Image (cartoon, rainbow, N blue to C red; front, side):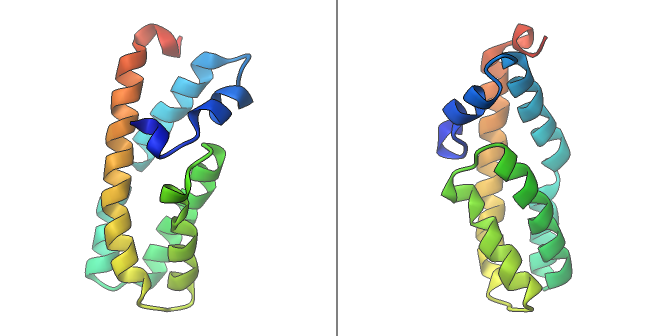
Length: 120
């Protein structure tokens, strides 16, 4: 369920006057970050901490705007470690890629359940 990853009530409250915007925002998140788990895995596989830090930074900004739960916000620690050159970021990022896959699947499911009229 999407509530495992974001505070949907807070997000809806932020845009209470524009409920369709929430669906568009979530759809954009999915489109913008569909390849991010693969990029995280590639950075882990090549021990590329600079790329890992950059990907983590991109995610951190978006997730803050979506009222992400701690399950997703652990990307902040991954970014900190990667920027510091600490290889401890690598196994955390590998696990996080799986979490992000699950979040993106939950987004798909949630948006599909809302139907096409919700985004108009």
